[in-house]
Image (cartoon, rainbow, N blue to C red):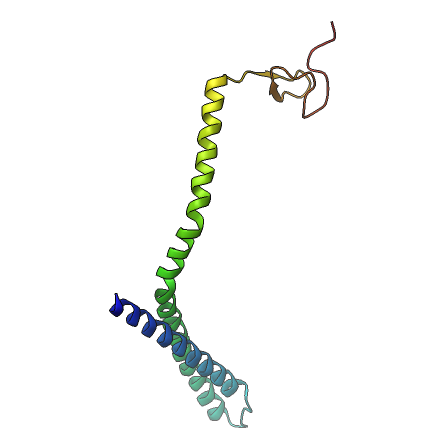
Length: 138
């Protein structure tokens, strides 16, 4: 267990460092590209090649660091979510089970509203959707 914790910590720290280094390199590459272009075409071409290389390196480091960090936190996050969501799922499934049992036990009968077609309970006098009387007065 201790080895997993050490590995997870190394992934987390290494991932954060790679992300920071990647961002710094990408910022430097943009500054290099959009810095003062010299009057010569050769100098501008060299800066654009430098920019492409540095931005590619920075992007690779950024993605690699992000993946490392993701894998270092996936287990704690999934464990936290499972512990927090489990009681809610249990409560919802219990309420659903009770509702289904009640519906089966009582055999709920519905009548169709002649005005809007909404299904209303058998003992209702007015439609809860359109508000009109379900049966004529006797």
